[in-house]
View 1 (cartoon, rainbow, N blue to C red):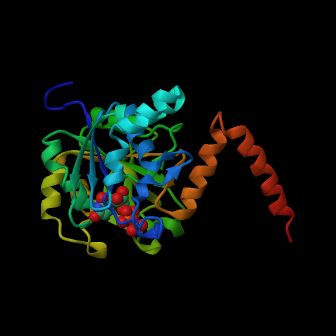
View 2: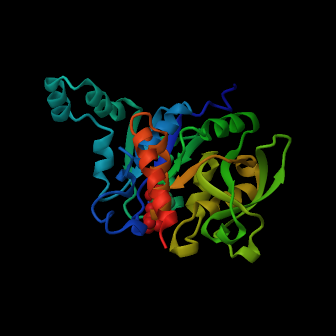
Length: 303
Ligand code: UTP
């Protein structure tokens, strides 16, 4: 590895969105703090960054997001109460989140869109490639994605986005990529991007999901990006400019993800995440699965 191609070490987690799809739960609680089984959704995301080797985590937060900072900080009162009780298991659980990574925070002020949230990371990131993980996008820990994206960026340079094939009628919910194949089966070259296209205008059924490894050239582009769809500064619009001109920040590639992913900001997907992950847990799984089986049997018998 040369100096012109530094190893990626920083992860940026935008978590300043309002979470309106989950109201009223998110009126005073960040949606990223909603529990998935017994851990807040955001902890899975930070754990994913750390397991891909990124130990420096910058979270983009906003008003009402203080619980995020508290969750990754020490809680001495709770720790000493658990210590006094000799409850080592729970003490470990409490300390896990504060020992995970070196955490940094910056406030976005007004939530002017995902592109604007990423731009808030510029002073911290500097001139290195960096990863972006959306705080409400949960990749099943059994299906690693980010580590593969970091490898692809190190091999091919430029930026790497995560793509997932969706049903054509679902593509209007996502950013969508026009792609060409490469010599790697799970890697495509991205030739264009469009945010939430109508199905008839979509260049493919490859949807952009919430993991990115970006060249720092994105910051210059974001500074010049006008508000787009929904009046927000869209990351996809800036990525489109990167993809359109390789001279600016190198090529844009996509890693095609075929694993399990949940949008924990969406109520149905959130419920699916809880059921799937609870079933796999050694402590809760056996009981929960047998309850689920009888529940499903009952449901199937219902008129
Ligand atoms: P969403 O599109 O899910 O928006 O943002 P949202 O406001 O969080 O949620 P809803 O749609 O109102 O329910 C995608 C990601 O971008 C972050 C969000 O926190 C989320 O991780 N984001 C979005 C910001 O950090 N700042 C913004 O201005 C907008």
